[in-house]
Length: 130
Image 1 (cartoon, rainbow, N blue to C red):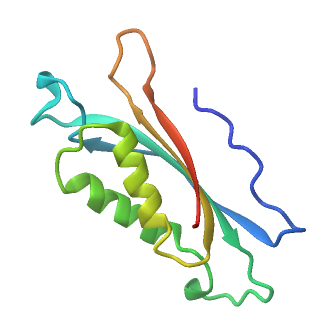
Image 2: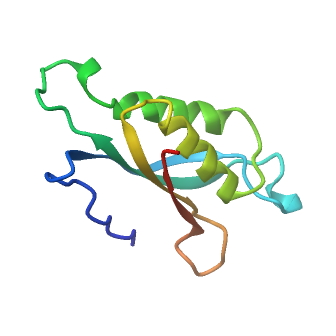
Image 3: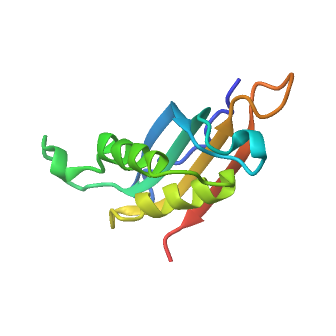
C-alpha cells in the first residue's frame, strides 16, 4: 500500500500539483554485496508544486511535462549503481528543479525486495527551490 499524497495544489498560492505515481523500474541500488551488479525493482513517486499558469494554452510547452521528467528519471536509474535510496531521491529532486516553474518536490524511492515480509522499504524527501 502506498501512502496517500498530501494536498499540494493551492488556488490561493497559484500552485498546480504535477505528479508521477508508482513508476516501477529495475535499478542497480544498494550497499550490500548481493545487491552490487544486480538489478532490483524500485518504485518511485514524485509530487511537484508548480507555478500555475494564469492563462493556460493547450500546448505542452506551457506546462511541466511529467513524461519528460519520467525520461530523466529513467536515464538516471540507467546510468549505473547508486548505493543509497536517499541519494537516488536527491538526484531525482535535482532533475525536477531543472524546470524553473517547480517550486517544491517530494520524492519517494522504495526498494521492493529490501526486507523479507515487507512490501517495500525506502525513503521520502521533500525539497524546496533555494
